[in-house]
Length: 141
Image (tube, rainbow, N blue to C red; front, side):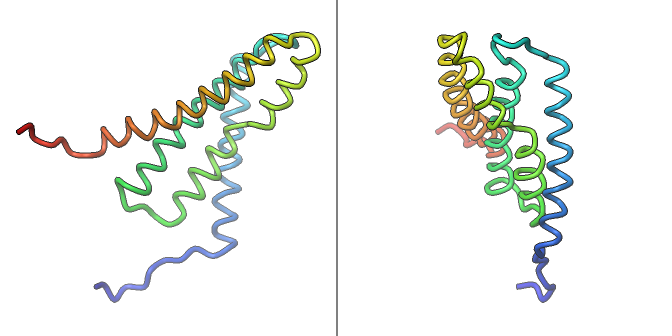
């Protein structure tokens, strides 16, 4: 057992890394929205891709920081809550769905259920793929 003191982040440290990560994630989301704009009444691909890719990364991140590596205590709040929390945008997803409902109910329904299903599958895919990549191969008998 080591005599070295363990680092325990305090409230201001955690809030600071979440704020910094959130700013980075929000800028990345803005960049994606600018790169893939959508007109009113059309399928919001940038929001869909943002949320699905963010969920994939969240699944992968959680495996890395909880199963595969020993990480700094501020890694999870910075990367998960901060960057990926700032990047994903389920509030925009909700507003997009509500706006589509008035004139495009079928598109709204497809967008709503498609996003939920794709996001859940993305998290699971991130977990499964990352586990396979981070665990050593077992020899065949």
